[in-house]
Image 1: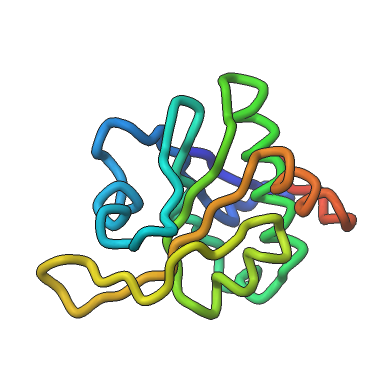
Image 2: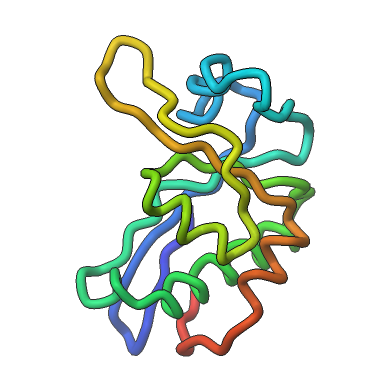
Length: 140
């Protein structure tokens, strides 16, 4: 879990969880994602629970910066091969800008009427997608 601070104000959080322990929504949904779902392995992580303060939610550059520093920290601390995430269809399109690719749409969470888009990106591709622009000075 990471927290993001700007000018003494906490503006957001994000969680990165290793796959392989059945702790994540991604792992719950993967068996229902179809034949195109990629396998997971050591070094694969779910990134999720990204929450930004209301003033920053529509700021794509703030989002980019927060994701970038979280990924840099994670890669410096452990092996990160791929990042997986679950999101809405609209957010799946946004995350493509950051190096993720949609691999399943409208995946229903068993026992609910909720459906998700599943995305995945190699850590190098995501890092390149996140570093393509300048960002505000947000620290972790």
